[in-house]
Image 1 (cartoon, rainbow, N blue to C red):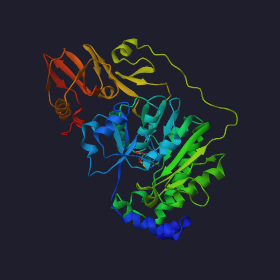
Image 2: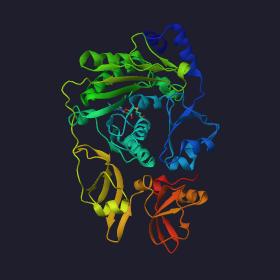
Image 3: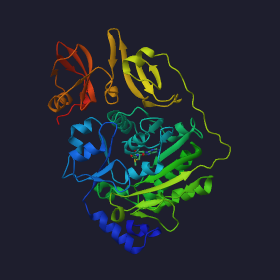
Image 4: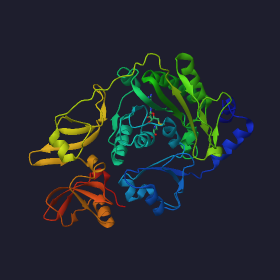
Length: 427
Ligand code: SAM
């Protein structure tokens, strides 16, 4: 079956024509979610007046890449925002996570939905961001670090590893499933050329397996959001119908907003480029009914690392040591047996001559012995240069606008650059 014909499963002819026409328009709009822990919405709007608030999602802005190169700005390196696709932001917005949630994102790389979720959780609770492909899991981990997230653990496992550990466990789950990617046709010609109906069918059966397994990890009363960037009914409604027919899952209604498209059955929403803008997404919300309140209890563990707590100024949460490195978690969660890429916020290593802070901590903390740089100095530091500036000897957190950029080690007013070599960039 060809692309046009297969859309007839849920779209009328005039909608199909409008959708196909919009896929030929290569004018792509970008969006970013602001990290308001680092910069206020007002200051950001003042500095970049051409950004447009997302019509639905708070703290998300739409922009034209002819106006701003946000990917090459110092604010990007400092984790002031995460750039993603305008439709993507609807997923976490509808899931509506909070500070008490224990969330699982099953297919998380490169990280847009996880980072947005973590921001909505105000860096509290726990978010396990999993990615099956190792190289992508490292990219995810580096994005999580840049954005200063202390509530995210990054794992690199297949869904069966997670299922065997976490039955009825998470209060919220995101399954942004691998899909045929027709919602990426405008951005990537390769997606268009690779599309076959056979591929849609085989992904549909993988998605049915993934959603059923994902659902088994949801606690009673918990919410699951399923999304794809595919326009195929087989990868969207049909996957949800499979779940509803084979489990006790219940569909949650999604309130109509300007541009949402519902198929006849009203199972989830389609964001179609000609109606909503953005590239295209399908989103559906599911709930697990409460039967016997079998909600897991999370152990509240005390740690013994008061010295590290003092040095790092982390008052709450749980500090643990793995090999020689100290990590921080908001809450203890058992991850034994999983392949961990990032076991929480990495704090550093205790050496004989003192504590060596990890770069990850610089994006979160503001309280460590710090030194404010000018914009020119900050850019030079990110490039990898030594900074000369009046400063006490020893480890120092270098800041710009009072937000951490990275560490340096000062001796006689020369600050050796500890910015990770792989991240150095000319801005
Ligand atoms: N949620 C991500 C974000 O917001 O940045 C995008 C995820 S992308 C749509 C789908 C992900 O599913 C890919 O990273 C891919 O590696 C992963 N994936 C592929 N096959 C998978 C499988 N069998 N099980 C779980 N994840 C899989």
